[in-house]
Image 1 (tube, rainbow, N blue to C red):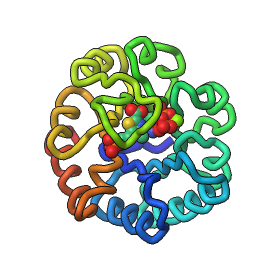
Image 2: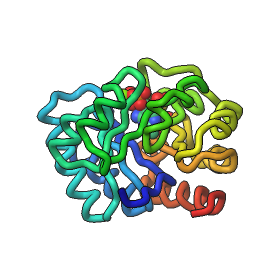
Image 3: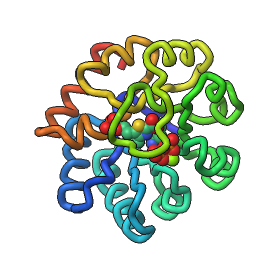
Image 4: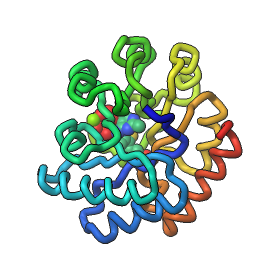
Length: 213
Ligand SMILES: Cc1ncc(COP(=O)(O)OP(=O)(O)O)c(N)n1
Ligand SMILES: Cc1nc(C(=O)O)sc1CCOP(=O)(O)O
Ligand SMILES: [Mg+2]
């Protein structure tokens, strides 16, 4: 698998039902410097998810940026995505790996220190600290935020890439990278910004100044 740059993951906003707006924002995130995209659809039917996934793949390929699919291995396989992101209540890691093979990215959500040391987290390509801060974007099943202290504790236990998600914006991104994360995943900091491309660029500059990228 080629080295993946987890610095800035744009997670698509499933509240945007209008395709024009959805794909305009995705393209501005790509232009602004997102390093990886996650397509996340929680409510639409399978055909809508599949069609969005196909268009996302074409757009990500245009910018040579990897696309991962949230939750749905079938969609990931159908469009030859670069990988999937799974949570603790999604398809078990071992099954996902068997279906996708070793050349694809598998990310796993971790909400506790105990989860971070379990074999599936250790075997995953990266973990998502889920969440680092509180957020209104994810409406159900949001765990207690781990905060910077939780991130630091997990960093001590986990040697692979860590991507933080939840309530991240330009005001707190620097602190996350400074405390051991390899990247951030954001929805609203880009999708709800007045100027998504400028917001992406600003986040990227903050992250690159702080990290080693
Ligand atoms: C990078 C990243 N981390 C965590 C999550 C959350 O995944 P999950 O716990 O399965 O919740 P849903 O996103 O499926 O609602 C994520 N998507 N990305
Ligand atoms: C998709 C997602 N998963 C989370 C988790 O904690 O598992 S928080 C979240 C939404 C993040 O949105 P925003 O950047 O707008 O806070
Ligand atoms: Mg999930």
